[in-house]
Image (tube, rainbow, N blue to C red; front, top):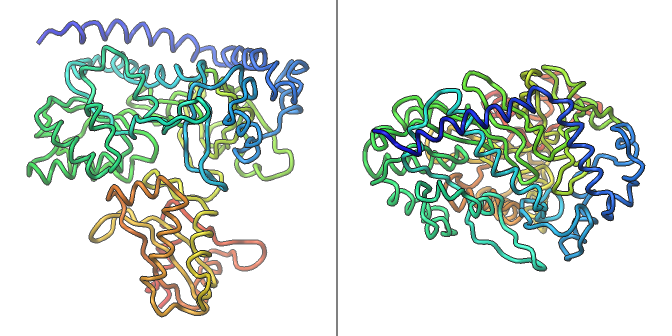
Length: 499
């Protein structure tokens, strides 16, 4: 069936592809221009004056003047921005704050400016258009598209709107997609995730769904509810559903489950968005990596992960990166982030053009479901849980259980006790309560029935020592990671392995 929207999508897609290739094929010049613009535009900000931007003429000058920072290091400046001061990290005031889970002191407020906001929208749009240009498939633009995301309801802090990035982005859906976009605004504003998903299922079942997008763990829940309600595969319910767009976590652990729920394979596009910027998207179906966004007001630096905690580790730009090397990605951007460590590690899969995969985090973490739980949070949770009791913990580590024999996935805590609690389930509840209080993503996943509460597995006496000995790392300064995003340690620590 002929459609004007579908017909117009193809020439627009080829126009965008030519535009993208122009900067992708001239990466060094593109990044040099971004760098120069950033320094020029922020010269008269408080940060620019403090770091003598007027004297920065080269990347080596920048390295000398601007050290690598994480959020805690940048926080004194951010707090001034949050308080309403203009011209601190970037000219004027930000349009929004993307509120995210913090690392050491509660919520983080990531500024989104007039200059940085459009790059989030354009990258998401271009990912779809590059797919159309490659495959010639544009029929899906005629159907309904669902974007499983946070509530678009925003709050105000000193005159600046704040919310989760996905909720902020919901306010910028292009007009030509408004009629196709689902769920409805009212449903999207539902705070309780389980109630929201039920409403989304009811709204979408009668529709011609062609594109489904979201973090895999959330989409899996949506698919399972469709299966339960209809008794059919998702692909039979939505016969024209042929494109899945995802980001946030590794899709591979979910792929087999998704294909089972859908009943067939569908094309997919991987995105790499974050509150700090939209960094990359999959531009080719047969490519493993995602095209690094070099023309989006973001200047990239990279530090080899193995050397990151050394004194003055070497910082390089894209012209000096290599394949098959794990790098910590450092960004400076039109949002006012400067030599900012977002915490992610990446590997380059291609240098012509520059494509990356997300290889992990520079610090140990769990984010198998998008929860971003970090070491400080689990240590604090256990500390609070045992306070005032006679329980003593020798060692512990935490890992995700993605595929339990029954029930929902969960976090599995492996604990070796010096003095074991009389009531293990009660201890687990205390840990759970603290972790949910500290981490809003984890709280949402539990409340949304994506995860079940954590479970404790008791490790036998000296079990951790046995493990470290088995891998040749007993003694010295070797430490058990507090968390892992896989089960390499967990599967060895399961009690039966030491029997």
